[in-house]
Image (cartoon, rainbow, N blue to C red):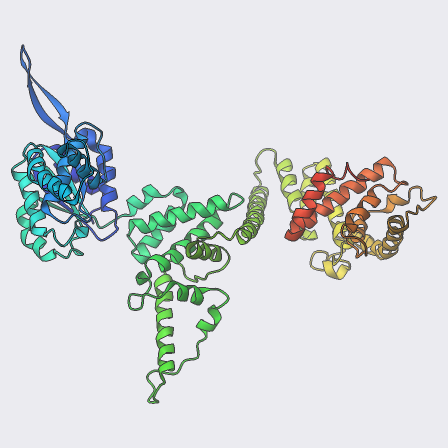
Length: 612
């Protein structure tokens, strides 16, 4: 296999010797031949020199000058004269400037017409035809006659006009090599050339070397921005044999677009999932023949088949046996063919992506590729889930790491502090049995302050879960974590559940107090210390109760609670903080509430101003 590194070494070896030669650089369409050549020339042009002896007054001294260079795309060129003119003008241009790649031949035509016509490129059709004739027959020949020691690259041979025969191109290559001491690189996909017969007849006489690029993985590695994702590209490349460089450039473009438009830094797992889906979906859109050579399924059909919501009906197609003696209808035959096509695609994808489906990020990718529209709402939702999942994964990894340290009998430094931090993050994740075990470990280390802190956090969590709406209100709800009544939190849990039975009375009492104030402006007298029993869970139920009133009634009701005259400053600030937390929870859990809540909190500076 001729990989990039070997080809570059061979090209450098051939060209820097400065001998006239002709090289055919071939490879399948889109594999990156042009990219390889341009990157190679850019990296090595200082090594391409030609000897030039200069007579000095005292002695002869040998010095070096850079080799002249011309890169010509034959795209659309329709005659040998136009090709010669393109080479001549490119060399003329690059002799005074740095090498200009991707020559715009029409620009150089205008320059020559300007020269021939005495300063004007305008004129009649007859003037232009006269200019072309003069340019081709005189100026081109003059420049070409002085063209020596030049490195010429001819690209896009397959895209030349049919009016320019391959035999004439090959003749020019031979002339440049043998008569003008040039080195010529011809880049082509000879298997696709319409002049393949002519090329085969003459190539042995014209070319000194045939270099075939049949691997582009190292080029692909150069263009990707996240090296950690390269193994996914590599597996796709190897299992599906997609070598087209332009395809991977488009994938990279869309991948960067998705990452940039996402609200947060995505985890590596999400990035990997996005890339895998993008590679498959982009393949179905750009080069569907790679999925099924026989049918080249349409992109819309591909999306329909692999949309996760539709896949079940395609998996469970009830089809007749095509080998049955019974004559099948056209519709049945079509269903059989469709089923076989789908299975062929699944089999093709399986080595790279065993259970591919279009869901979640896949739907974002389809919308972006098909409609050039980024589904921001879905992307934001997936980004939030990704943050939660990644946080959970990190917490799990840290928990296992610390437990491994503990059971290894060789914990590392500051173990109690690190263990407490981990346990604190897992209070609402692990069951009470496990949380009790965490407390025991801190007790065994003599970390009484950390043990007390984690116990306090666990009890607050129990209180919240028991008292919240739809919470764990019975011992039965906690049965998997408190099977043994000797566990630390069994008694606390039992008492909390028992006390919660009186919560409805407290709820009614406080709701009556606050609604009376809101509706009638009334104040309950002699309730000193009554608000000491008010907690966040009761307050949550009150502020979200259904109330009849004006459009902004809930804001006014909430303000009436915070500004209740009988509250002392401490109670008032505690209630304000609870309400702030409850409003922010609502904004997170209900996207439709986010904008009005955040706008109101900004306007009131977190419920501290503009309350009257």
